Length: 55
Image (cartoon, rainbow, N blue to C red):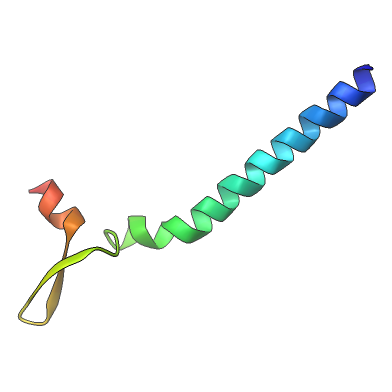
């Protein structure tokens, strides 16, 4: 029984790390570049919703 619960625990940790890795891959660009939500373009420069939220 103990071996079974250890297997479940290891599988759960593996799945959580996998989900976290996938999330990180898809969202690191959003964090680095201030998000993909362009709300305006001024003189050819994108203004993101992130920049407006900061102000």
